[in-house]
Length: 90
Image 1: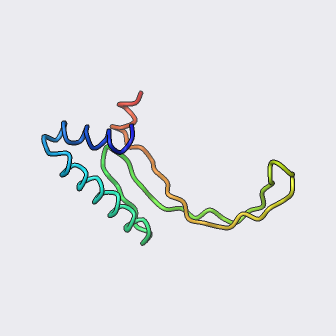
Image 2: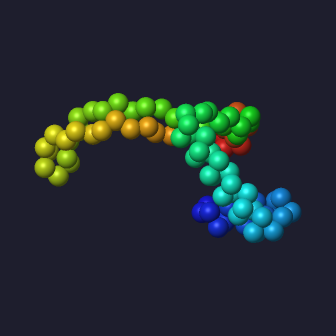
Image 3: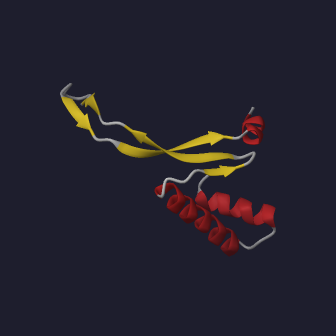
Protein backbone atom coordinates (compact mmCIF):
# COMPACT_ATOMS: atom_id res chain seq x y z
CA UNK A 1 0.00 0.00 0.00
CA UNK A 2 1.40 3.39 -0.94
CA UNK A 3 0.56 6.83 0.47
CA UNK A 4 -2.28 7.51 -1.98
CA UNK A 5 -3.90 4.15 -1.23
CA UNK A 6 -3.56 4.76 2.50
CA UNK A 7 -5.23 8.17 2.15
CA UNK A 8 -8.10 6.57 0.19
CA UNK A 9 -8.52 3.88 2.85
CA UNK A 10 -8.43 6.42 5.69
CA UNK A 11 -11.04 8.55 3.94
CA UNK A 12 -13.42 5.66 3.31
CA UNK A 13 -13.05 4.07 6.78
CA UNK A 14 -13.16 7.39 8.59
CA UNK A 15 -16.05 8.86 6.62
CA UNK A 16 -13.99 11.96 5.74
CA UNK A 17 -12.82 13.54 2.52
CA UNK A 18 -9.56 12.54 0.87
CA UNK A 19 -8.25 16.08 1.45
CA UNK A 20 -8.92 15.80 5.20
CA UNK A 21 -7.35 12.33 5.30
CA UNK A 22 -4.25 13.68 3.53
CA UNK A 23 -4.00 16.57 6.01
CA UNK A 24 -4.33 14.15 8.93
CA UNK A 25 -1.69 11.77 7.57
CA UNK A 26 0.72 14.61 6.75
CA UNK A 27 0.21 16.07 10.25
CA UNK A 28 0.91 12.66 11.82
CA UNK A 29 4.10 12.17 9.82
CA UNK A 30 5.35 15.71 10.52
CA UNK A 31 4.56 15.57 14.25
CA UNK A 32 6.11 12.12 14.59
CA UNK A 33 9.27 13.27 12.84
CA UNK A 34 9.60 16.32 15.08
CA UNK A 35 9.05 14.30 18.26
CA UNK A 36 11.59 11.65 17.24
CA UNK A 37 14.12 14.33 16.33
CA UNK A 38 13.85 15.64 19.91
CA UNK A 39 14.47 12.11 21.19
CA UNK A 40 10.91 11.47 22.36
CA UNK A 41 9.24 8.08 22.18
CA UNK A 42 5.80 7.80 20.57
CA UNK A 43 3.56 5.07 21.90
CA UNK A 44 0.18 4.21 20.37
CA UNK A 45 -1.46 1.57 22.54
CA UNK A 46 -2.37 -1.50 20.49
CA UNK A 47 -0.60 -0.21 17.37
CA UNK A 48 3.03 0.12 18.41
CA UNK A 49 5.77 2.48 19.44
CA UNK A 50 8.36 4.54 17.60
CA UNK A 51 11.72 5.37 19.18
CA UNK A 52 15.18 6.59 18.21
CA UNK A 53 18.28 4.51 18.77
CA UNK A 54 21.93 5.39 18.19
CA UNK A 55 23.86 3.14 15.84
CA UNK A 56 27.59 3.24 16.63
CA UNK A 57 30.28 3.87 14.05
CA UNK A 58 31.68 0.70 12.56
CA UNK A 59 33.93 -0.67 9.85
CA UNK A 60 32.34 -2.29 6.82
CA UNK A 61 33.46 -3.62 3.47
CA UNK A 62 32.75 -2.47 -0.04
CA UNK A 63 31.17 -5.59 -1.61
CA UNK A 64 32.63 -4.83 -5.06
CA UNK A 65 36.25 -4.24 -4.05
CA UNK A 66 36.47 -5.83 -0.61
CA UNK A 67 38.12 -2.63 0.66
CA UNK A 68 37.35 -1.63 4.25
CA UNK A 69 35.26 1.52 4.70
CA UNK A 70 34.28 3.52 7.75
CA UNK A 71 30.55 3.78 8.41
CA UNK A 72 29.64 6.81 10.51
CA UNK A 73 27.48 6.68 13.63
CA UNK A 74 23.88 7.76 13.16
CA UNK A 75 20.46 7.79 14.75
CA UNK A 76 17.92 5.28 13.45
CA UNK A 77 14.16 5.04 13.93
CA UNK A 78 12.83 1.82 15.46
CA UNK A 79 9.24 0.58 15.42
CA UNK A 80 7.93 -2.13 17.71
CA UNK A 81 4.48 -3.46 16.86
CA UNK A 82 1.84 -3.54 19.58
CA UNK A 83 -0.14 -6.62 20.55
CA UNK A 84 -3.29 -5.70 18.58
CA UNK A 85 -1.35 -5.04 15.37
CA UNK A 86 0.72 -8.19 15.80
CA UNK A 87 -2.47 -10.18 16.40
CA UNK A 88 -4.05 -8.90 13.18
CA UNK A 89 -1.04 -9.95 11.16
CA UNK A 90 -0.85 -13.47 12.63
